[in-house]
Image 1 (cartoon, rainbow, N blue to C red):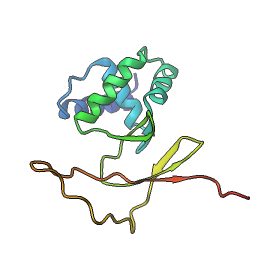
Image 2 (tube, rainbow, N blue to C red):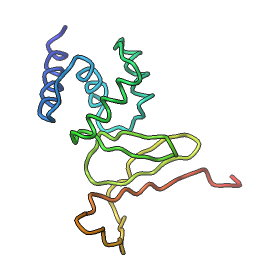
Image 3 (tube, rainbow, N blue to C red):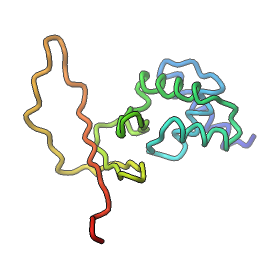
Length: 143
């Protein structure tokens, strides 16, 4: 194992620990795949495919469990986009998304003039945690 790879694993291990999770071998391997390429949006199935291709022996159920644990620990944001299709976003800051229908592709809307007004008052004892806006795109018709 080269020095760069060892440093990366230590950083991922530390990030998992700081999120309050036990850094198991599978969690570290999945976190490394998730966060090594910068901000991204992945489904559990896509991460599972990446893990298998990278030689990480992990079941789809384990990937789902890890993704939900990472989400509960604040390491990921969950985006429900297409019925049962769920994406996990490594960028946990407040931001919005474009979704290209038919391609199942999602990407960040650059910060800009997106505003939300007239939000309803939350029920007693509750507060609004965040508002997710997903703008659906498709190719123009007639082109």
